[in-house]
Length: 583
Image 1 (cartoon, rainbow, N blue to C red):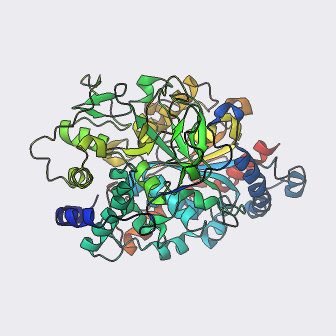
Image 2 (spheres, rainbow, N blue to C red):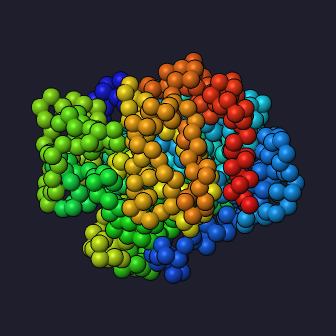
Image 3 (cartoon, rainbow, N blue to C red):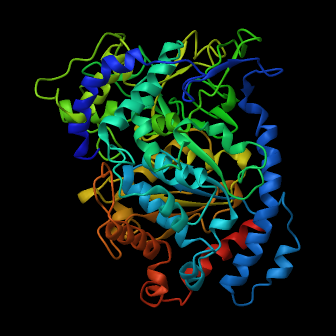
């Protein structure tokens, strides 16, 4: 969070009473979910059924667009001896290669860099076409994100109808700090945030820091998107519905009282390298929220009906369902909710992101009472926003700390039990800081994954490969095919963490998808700025976007002769691999 936040949060104290007095109903505040008739047969869909009918239908629609995009891209790549027409005639919308892009966590460092990767592969960007990479964006079927990659890259791309980066830039106004608001009026900004959350709380819906913090991130969304539903992206005739862009997927983790480890009464999910495949990895698309493999549940519910009281896999009252709980800003606030990690780090000096192992102080907790705030930490902006969320809505600090959702899986599985709420957090807190999991689920049959990594795992907030290694380990434990990833030491010594690298090139389809790993590294600028950076000057934005372009295009092809002595041009690798995947 930026330096503006301290002064801004002081305003909240003055607004607290006013906000309580101005809470309204669904007719007066569009942020508030509404009760409505239930759809026919609202149930939890078992993950063993494969893709939902909605996603299957959408893939066919998107496949037609991908066919056109792939044909154009292969022509731009101009691979010597490759018969584009002969290749394309063998394909249709059901057999065209499935390509995904994954944007890591890392706050705005990753979020802005991810937009640069989007542009570097966009056929609408002349420099990308000239580099021979323009067109990969047009053949993406999925784009996944978590934390900054989810709240910035994926959210802005989806909310702006898969526009070019320049159009997104014009709409977003990155010079406006997301923790102050688009107009610069801090009082008005925080007043609106707490009025929205207060109106929701008044009707009995759970409210947490994900509601308040999430509206920070909505600063860069198109106007009025704070009150737009995430499921609206898939409404009839939208850009997503007609297949004009990839399906956005955002990932989340959870804490479970009495089961999750804790430090100083602060719960955190745990790490996949110590918990095996037992941690639940949730994904949310405009169609569904749920989990595929591992963890407490293997099932899905429609995103449109989140907030509805569910029990044993069905709606508890078929005449009363909830619509509009899935606010875009709530999803942003959920995937960026790493408060537990920030507090454990700040209070006790124990980082729990992928870069550092935890000490033996971790233990299981059966307590749900409040969290002690160490002396001297009370004025932390992060502590203040949780404290004020708690005091406004008569909660404990602990109760306000999580993205709180009515649990649609209550009673659905023995592991889920009778838990009435899901307490969701930033998906990176499992140690998998890149949301690759949705792209390697066998049901999606993804052939090729572009992985942009800006996790700040290594020295000076650069990348060291830990997160990718954790994903490979988790996939192995879950029986999910994935390429072999070298040890972190090898990743560093062989420069895999400073340049584009392919994994799985010589593998069969049974060994998992082909992976192009793009680690944030200093090509033309030092893009390892703080993940908390809340605004960008035009110069800073240009430098970050250009650095991502140079990474994605291998220095715009200038390093081919030096680093690839075989003479194979870097821009030809993706289409060659796509050709291999499609055969």
